[in-house]
Length: 348
Ligand SMILES: NC(=O)c1ccc[n+]([C@@H]2O[C@H](COP(=O)([O-])OP(=O)(O)OC[C@H]3O[C@@H](n4cnc5c(N)ncnc54)[C@H](OP(=O)(O)O)[C@@H]3O)[C@@H](O)[C@H]2O)c1
Image (cartoon, rainbow, N blue to C red; front, side, top):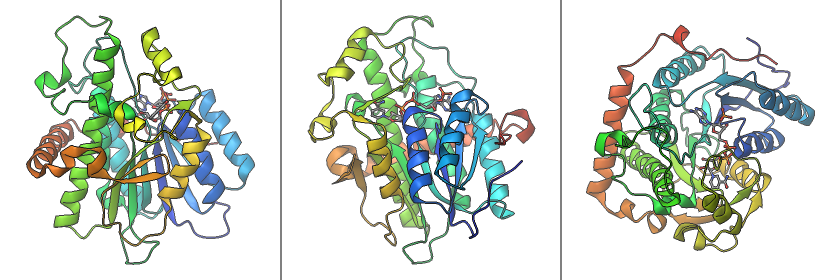
């Protein structure tokens, strides 16, 4: 394994970006590489040897000497997530890489057909967008950079949200973990697909805010967790692949966008580099420990509960946390040996 470290100065933290080869994830990596030369960029991709990953590394190399690696991570397989978590914790402990300063959940999928459940027994949209990001965050807790009371201490977890969360329902995946009674391959309507995707994004946001509250009340962990909705984006996103034509047209015209995005008319359709620059800025904002729960829509900042009213419902939040922690416990029982899944870094 080789990490490029011709930096001439020690690294300040590790930035993990899931979906690092995705349309937004890759732009976030570029934006952080441009503005934060002394961070270690740890990108995850399902297929780290693919050409899009190689092209991204080449692009980042042109910016200047950077410490960067790409690891395999498949969010639809909790053994892969566990293996990634174990390996990352070991590497931070042994000081092979610096503690995590930022975990940016950018990976996501949308699907407009009834899918087979994952090996872990979940709807793949729910697992990829919600269960696995939560699992990853909890699993990595001890690898985050500790707070030392200075603006450079502590760490941030940014969940990349979506206006589609406004279609979501908190109880959508309660029944049979999202199992649809219709046969796999059945085409879903635009409405069904949006509710399913929106529910996965909504639940992830709510669960992570619930985790934030729990950490703030029980531990002295200087960890800030929040959602950032990048707004509509043009580009090569694969999230709309397979969507009914009506969905794709709605994305192009914005006629189908939900109330969260409509709140801010200037969060219009942007190139991915626009939200990526905002994310790179917010991720490294120098504040000691953020007290308020915030929700970003592009670069506009809101009280999170004004966007997600569930956050005002203490018992509902507690119940979501208990629910998700239950998923984490069950998932941990599926621990595979680190050799059993592909987390070997790809050397460039
Ligand atoms: N596109 C938009 O207009 C829009 C608007 C608002 C919010 N967002 C949010 O922005 C984020 C990024 O979206 P995007 O437009 O960049 O989408 P994208 O180009 O399709 O990228 C999605 C990324 O997720 C990865 N991924 C999918 N399934 C995975 C799995 N099982 N395990 C690990 N990684 C997996 C993909 O990897 P592979 O290459 O291997 O498939 C890819 O890197 C998402 O959270 C989305 O909800 C997007």
